[in-house]
Image (cartoon, rainbow, N blue to C red; front, top):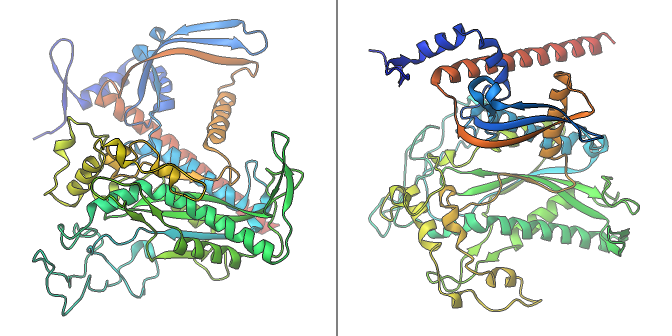
Length: 523
């Protein structure tokens, strides 16, 4: 029996998706419609806009043409949703992933306005993990014998083999002898839900951005201290306001991606690059002083990760606050080393891939929660995710104003946190993200190019491809009227055409790369 969804046309007749496709493809305006939907062709849920589009001369501001969307196919203008999450819109996430790759890779090799000399700066790839909030099921392979980690079939070790572990205070086994498969739903789930500290985990997620900020500052301070100890002088620079400042001769630029683990705790993958400071141009990307090496960068990262902690503001459930610190597994590795597995391209592709993820690794993907929907997801006696969401909602409740702590002082680094009104209120806003409210891809201002620059470059290319006059700009006065394709048949046609164009571009890039390789080989 067919399960093709049905829609109802104005005459009340049932119309299946295949009939919708045939009806659209047989219409005389099909080619124009397909070209019209091209900007949002592969989007799962494009935005539909209505209004006026005008062509305006750059120099004079004179309107040379005007078009209303009523004159366009479907009487609307289609725009891709631009969602970065692959689980929501694969096509828009594919575009975002490509931009993320460029942002990360340009900071490693240069290009697109970043000098090629950054490829010779010391760089490390660090992973900062959350601490343990209770034992969970995990999969560990002590020794890999496979040739390809992407298709690893090595036998994992027992999960938590403890012959004398006994049971926890709640009567649950404190050991697990299973050798979990990679898709085992138990991975990341606590051995005992009642022993696990769900409240501490969501608080850690919420304040992890502050922990990272202080860690980065501590690494900068340590490198500055190393410079002073080795007699490397500070650099005098003139700020944009005209003031003269003495700054350390070395600084760290970073690109960071947050990844959600199966247990619902975030950890950070960070590229940290050593840069110098140019006295005549503080924004220039120059190599670090000869006396500072990648060994010093590694030392600064490890020292900062060990020393820096954040004590959260008081809360009625935890008057002394929670301690937020990194876990024991702080991994720092160099890239582009002889015989090493990590290269510029691999690291950039790895970070770009995780930039399109959110909470999918934990097993669920949620939309923003409200008082009307929270009961469908939060349960203090439910499974692991239900308890994490309940912890976010419970801790984010309104608290008495006298719980916010004392006034900030110069000697109190906690001051900025303790004096913030309702410091835990954001937990409710980010309950669907298990407490984490930061961006999944961030970078230092000087690290690389920006997403805005990449989008502008792509828009300029499209205007040139469409032969739009250089002295004319397009100004739209548009209003949102809805989201999504008008029918499943339209979605199928538009998405299929987009996939064909994408495949054509991929083949074209491979052909150009092969031709360049042959030319290089011949030379």
